[in-house]
Amino acid sequence: MTGVNAAAERRLTVVVGITGGIAAYKAVGVVRDLVKRGHDVHVVPTEGALRFVGLPTLEALSRNPVTTSVFEDVAEVRHVSLGRRADLIVVAPATADTLARMTAGLAGDLLGTTLLATEAPVIVAPAMHPQMWEHPATTANVAVLRERGVRFVGPVVGALTGDDAGIGRMAEPEDIVDAALAVVGDDPGSPAAPSGTVARGDQGDLAGVRVVVSAGGTREPFDPVRFVGNRSSGRQGLAIAADAAGRGATVTVVAANVDAGLTEGLDATIVPVGSALELAEAVHAAAADADVVVMTAAVADYRPAEVRPDKLKKEAQGDTMTLELVRNPDVLADLVAARRTGQIIVGFAAETEPDRAARLELGRAKIARKPADLLVVNHVGWSAGFEREENAIEVLVPGGEVVRETSGTKAEVATAILDLVATALT
Ligand code: CTP
Image (cartoon, rainbow, N blue to C red; front, side):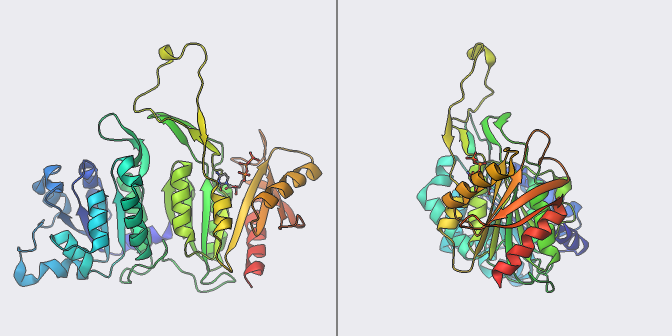
């Protein structure tokens, strides 16, 4: 990711706010990683965080003094100076209480004052139990914070404190650092932009256009080590993201289980997700102020009804096993339903039907069901479409007309699709 590399070349002043959740011990990894990448890191723990991780550890790793109180270093006006000096603020983990405090603008401790005094981008990595994350109060707080330009990384699905599992686990430290540095890739001093991206090209036919691409395939866990998944590698989505960035667009990639090596060097903000529910949330957040949304990701239509906290044992199952699945939301259909005037939405239809005419009929039925501006039909099978460099597509518009048909490398196919998008935008 060039954004990350560009940020890594500059020494940024990064404030890491650590709040009082069990994931605080993992936030130590965020501090260590940022220092390792050459940044000047100032840790601001809450009192609660210090019950989970010791102050000397944070001082040793960050190589800077650590305080929680607004009454230390008063002469330096530390309660505002840190926020004003920061190029970037990362809050990890952010508890439900922290999100509520941030929403209300509470300034009862050094982290609160720092967050109020800053104009730097703020990245938040929530961690809490699923019930707390899904509570309407938290959902409303997250929406307000997003509206103000705060970016979210995670939470992800996984094992939680105790025997629980589900959505609410803090994203991995490396993913948090990658997402945070990508945000300041080009412009460390600017206030947080409302979208999840800052890298902006100024040339090409998509200059200034905000493009969101979902890529990869979702994984639907049913226990801590297993999931129901699909073979999508994310290559076609990444080729679209790369082409869009090359044409001047500001690009966000919501990457479902995409190999990190494939996104290296890509001029885009990468939002890693795992399951369909995580993807839905990340895409809707990014789409709120996007001009173009391209839904390349293979999103699972169903997820296991139950995510077990421990590994499912075959002794308990016998010779056969039944996994109950429940429907996932259809992200593309929801995007189309909520589309703003002028927003272009592109859907994909991966079809195994080898016969062109029959395949197009399937595509026509799909675009009739979900009237995206463009539907890219691509032929997949045991040996076609997935994990390969080549692709073959037909592009349909509502009404069913084929407006483009091409095959070639995924980069060539990406260019063909974005040519149509650029035309649709004009
Ligand atoms: N999609 C989505 N949310 C889902 C499922 C799919 O947004 N829960 C999107 C995909 O990203 C893709 C398009 O919808 O752009 C695929 O349409 P869909 O009708 O779901 O295709 P299939 O999953 O292949 O459906 P079917 O098995 O019914 O053909």
